[in-house]
Length: 306
Image (tube, rainbow, N blue to C red; front, top):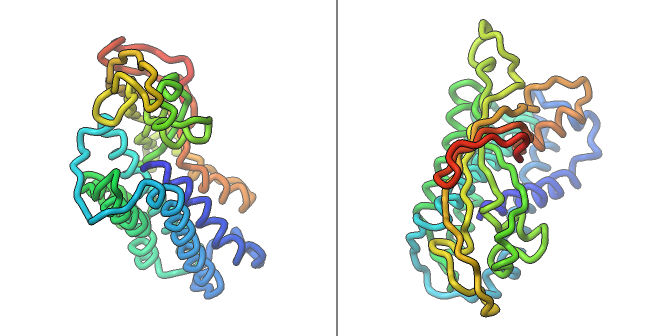
């Protein structure tokens, strides 16, 4: 459920922001512990998690029904797009968690471990919900992806005290949702959250961030992307949708991309607000000219891909 990233980030930021935005020097990172900020971060995280779990329970799990705990092997679903989404979600929440704890002036090693594990803790709760759902089950594949995402952000912080390799996200609407809106979304917001065909996950890095002698701007990145297309079902495409309407036959295939990207977190604006804004939306892959490879069309050039 990669869409949970956006739901969590929105509720968490509303939670901690409402408590602490009025503090003087809000956008300045703390050099030592600032108790009010620490309280704001913990309260915000708790509020975000509580709001997310409550909203998901009433909007999703309660509606679909609950049962005894079960385990589901869904490793062949969505051409593994959901697994990449889980890893990216855990990574992004962990990065936000680390940044917020550093903002509160908490000891750096404590900030790395507690903040970096925040995504894993949050998503493990979702997996437990899935385990009691009639329509799903606890997925060890999802949980492994959650662990990888958290380990990826924590490992880089322990090694470099920064994120030199970032996991990012982009989305563009596709035609597939209209054939199965109940599963892939009935409106632009739902398709953005549910339609894996339109989602792309990226690994972005700048050679310039790996050494002072490398003549390459640290904010300009190489980016490798993964997506999949032709999917109107999780592990196979059905002949008919929930309304009984026939669905055209689509070939399911993977897509691999190479592109450039911008790392907004490495820009140094004078404004603390802009710096915070760049960090907040640093998970979005910038649109650039892109090379794509897939088994249907082979190698193709896209003038602009997002």
